[in-house]
Amino acid sequence: MSTPENTAFVLVPGSFSPTTFYEKVVPLLQSHGYAVHPTALQSAGERPQGPATFQEDASFIHSTILKLVEQDKDVILAMNSYGGFPGTEASKGLSKAEREKEGKKGGIVALVYLASFIPPVGMSLRASLGDNLPDSIKNAGDYMKLDYDEDWKNIFSDLLEAEAKHYMNLMPNHSTVSFSGELTYPGYKFIPVTYLLTENDKIIPVESQREMIAFARGEGVDVKVVKTDSGHCPMLSIPARTVEVLIGAAKGV
Image (cartoon, rainbow, N blue to C red; front, side, top):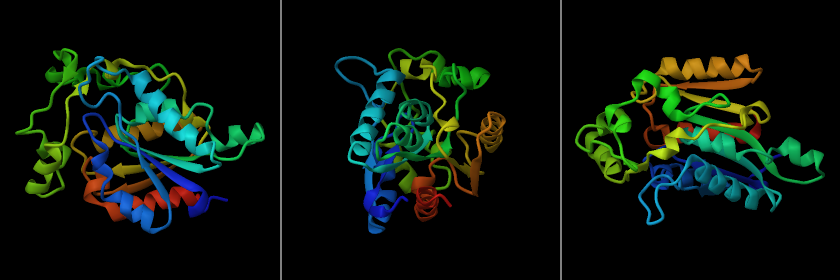
């Protein structure tokens, strides 16, 4: 049974997003006795060695989780937006069930998708956007850029303007190539799944979220859905409710 003492949360942000986006959630989880590990996307931000790939994101998340499960920790992996792609990929070989079969302790006990993508195998984020791919992404070079004067209205649609602009100004450029990485491992088929549905999301419309949930259920996945009236970043707009969902996933309820 997962208890706060043997449980850790790994929190993966979305594209263009720093781990700061979990700054409201972290202390709330810690106040319940949980270890919390916000995990940066390698693809968020420019770097001297060039733009990071989806595979590099997945590898970094995997290594973070591996260190925890090797300490016999039960891990809840929470992902926002693009984070669902590398997060799902990173779960390969790390589920609690798989490790128990190998006589090992620890493992991922829950995947929590926070307004996030549940991608089919072979799908990339670029392909999933299809005709909805913005020109800023279609025509990007090594890195994609946001419109800092306008995009805050959609990304942080349910935050007050001053706070929305504050978080908007924390968002770096993002690796273009990362959006072309294709999922190879459907971790959601092997690990319990919770989906936090954001009904006022202006980035991933609620209809698209419902389609992804329906896809997963069509694959035989028992998806627990929690509906909220949040925008795209529930960890910022409804942190207390988000924490309730995360702890519920940890407890299997």
